[in-house]
Amino acid sequence: MTYKVSALYQFVPLPDFRELKDPLHALCLDLGIRGTLLLAHEGINGTVSGTGEGINALMAELREGPLFQGRLDNLELKFSSAAEMPFKRMKVRLKKEIVTLGDPQIDPLRRVGTYVSPAEWNRLLEEPGIVLLDTRNDFEVEMGTFEGAVDPRIKRFSAFKDFVKNELDPAKHRKVAMFCTGGIRCEKASAYMLNQGFEEVFHLKGGILKYLEDVPEAESRWKGECFVFDERVALGHGLVEAGESTDDRS
Image 1 (tube, rainbow, N blue to C red):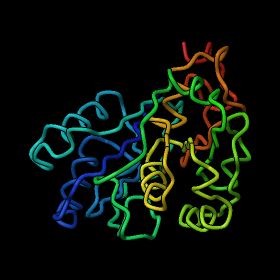
Image 2 (image 1 turned 135 degrees about the vertical axis):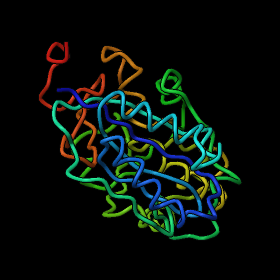
Image 3 (image 1 turned 120 degrees about the vertical axis):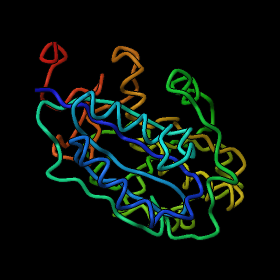
Image 4 (image 1 turned 180 degrees about the vertical axis):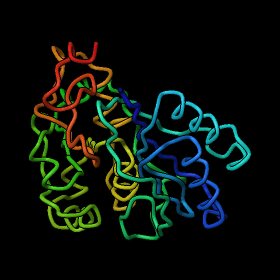
């Protein structure tokens, strides 16, 4: 059996996020879905898996159903597949942030960097003077990254602030491009860098996963595999599980 996997997030005010936890958990259980969803005052983030029918029903409920009352109308979604269920159980957790940077002044709803589509990403990387940043943790970078990317060598995303403070200079590094797994970390990282005075900050819309889905391998600047936080461990071009060929999915 093949399972459908959905990575999703949206920054959106959810002042009632605590009240949403139990009905959202019940909805996922009813649809036979497993994975983890994070809720905070600033939005939703997570990855879930189930049958194609179950995932499609959940996405429809999130975007159009009564629980969120139309607030999740701009979900960032990436779909992939798994040969086996990649999660053991369903968890809905309440958090201070849906991705932890640890700076309450940073609000992606007010200001973020410039989105760059996967189709335009390679062209951006050819521009002179561009600084390419991988905003992920060090163990993720070891599995794969873009050619020429700077590895901040951080253990957790909240340490990204220290890297920027100690290693980068707005007067010197005027044009920065950054990327992460699904795009969510770059929302906050780009907002933070703009707040620190960096003039031009770009980030890959949809993250590495969208790039691997959309850009043909022959044209790709990506090297290696992309770590994912489930039992598949890593994905390659076409969002194929590590060690699985494209033919294996047919």
